Image 1 (cartoon, rainbow, N blue to C red):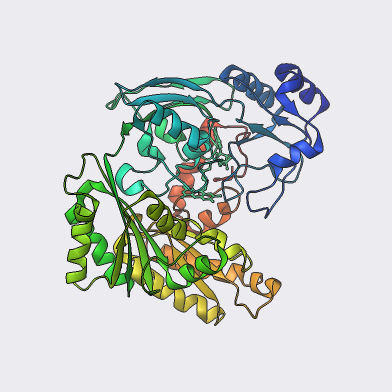
Image 2: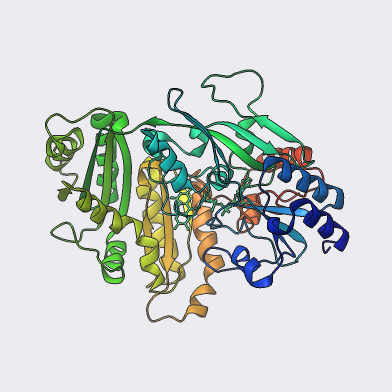
Length: 475
Ligand SMILES: Cc1cc2nc3c(=O)[nH]c(=O)nc-3n(C[C@H](O)[C@H](O)[C@H](O)COP(=O)(O)OP(=O)(O)OC[C@H]3O[C@@H](n4cnc5c(N)ncnc54)[C@H](O)[C@@H]3O)c2cc1C
């Protein structure tokens, strides 16, 4: 059903000429998915400036039964923040709601509007000598509201947790337009059911997050960054366990890079350099953030000592310690460009999986067998947040195969990997969420009772199915 002229007029009157976009070229910027894989359409992009405007807008949509698609920075990778192609859903961009509401350094908390880009939230914290630790490669564009709606992870989850662990309070506009004010900075509150956590990770399907109070931390006094090479994933996992023992809660990142991935980055990304003597089967960028200074210097810090023990235990074959910021950047560039480096080779079939850490080597070995059985010669890149049991599992076209023939194998590849994940008790959406892309797949793989509980929640909070319809859980 298209959005009626009456409804559009009510929306335009509410928001005023600067509060919406109807020009097709200007709208187009909001309609394409990040990787350009799909494009939606909406008669109007709404740009509300306050919670009250969001509330009034949702009331109009509820009255006319118009589906609303909230959008933050549009960096989500599962088609959750763009409308479908029916031209019957309203795109609601939070981009004009990007202000700092309050920062309280004594309380280690900060309240912001949800459309604030993540890098800005980090800057506000830094300006007050505090740390907001969430960090993702998309932080220049993604918003804190989007991070909350997707329960974003990133590279510091080992020490600081996912977004869920960083949210203290929320303000949410509900499907009937009512405003739920759950803004608070309490660290302890067991008064009743936890409403905040219903909305974290709900991908806009239960309500629109308009403001949030988030946790801040002391800034680290010292950072150790080390790049290591190792010959098999079992040893990498034993190294990780050793680092946990020896570095405790200072261990912040353990990000792995396979041989084929490092080769692609060095080949396709300018200004990257090999930081070890050789390219090994596996590599990891490992980081410890210390709350106190290191008296004996970076080169004999706890991480450097744990790595020395790793050498002795024959777990690693090579390592380099970053002694300057530019060396740190060189190390991280090799990790952060793994996705970009594939673009030159033709986009791959991507998966965002997790299993318990101890099962990672088994998953990687078994998944490789299954993928190569579908098409020998396929290039496989498992990389990323191994410290959390989360890998980006990208399957790339063999150089001698054309694009269409390769993508014809997509369903088969997805089934093979997702079935394995289900058998191993893992997740097919470790950090990017479900969106429209994986809604059917989640229903196929999750126990029926999980789906039924999710649907109960959806029906009771959004009885007319206007909140991001058909994303995450179908009504
Ligand atoms: C290069 C790159 C690297 C990435 N790395 C990571 C990573 O390491 N870890 C990780 O977790 N993710 C990563 N992502 C995915 C993405 O950046 C995150 O999912 C991010 O949290 C999305 O934020 P956004 O503001 O762009 O949200 P959008 O893409 O705009 O929206 C995402 C979902 O949230 C909903 N939504 C957005 N704002 C609101 C709101 N205010 N209220 C209710 N619902 C809302 C949308 O409807 C949609 O369903 C990466 C993406 C890219 C492109």
